[in-house]
Each structure stands twice: as C-alpha cells, then as structure tokens.
Image 1 (cartoon, rainbow, N blue to C red):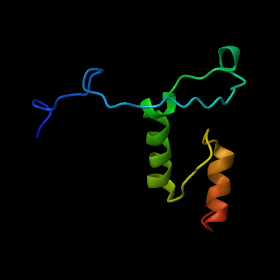
Image 2: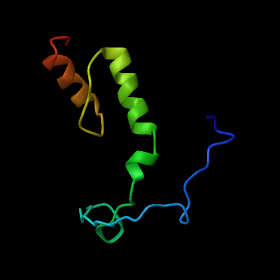
Image 3: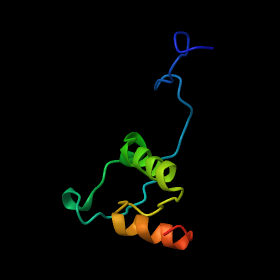
Length: 80
C-alpha cells in the first residue's frame, strides 16, 4: 500500500467512539485552555530534543530545554 491508494478515515467510515474530556488548565492559554493535540502536531520540540541528544548524548525530558537543563543532564550523565 502506498500514499496514492491509502484511504483516510472519514466520519462515514469511522468506528463508534466515546469522547473522554480531561481538563488540564493552562496558565498561559486563553481562559486556561490549550488546543487538543497541539504538542503532537508540532514537531519542533521533538526535533530540538533529538538535536540536543545527537550533539551532547543526553536526553532532556522536561520542556523547555533550557541551557541549565541541558547542563544538569550533562552533569547527571557524568559528561559535564
């Protein structure tokens, strides 16, 4: 199968599903809101984290990846 013949799901072909809402207020969002799936749709953060790993050999798992967090990860790994 390739992208030319792949049929994307539509509302007519979708399966029955239940919607579960979990509220997690955000201080910086409009009225404390955040978009559904925002982080999953933007690849900037994973690209930066992978670049840090490729350059330094350590994973920063708490965003934003500040210089202090990179330094702390290096120190923890014994590379700093």
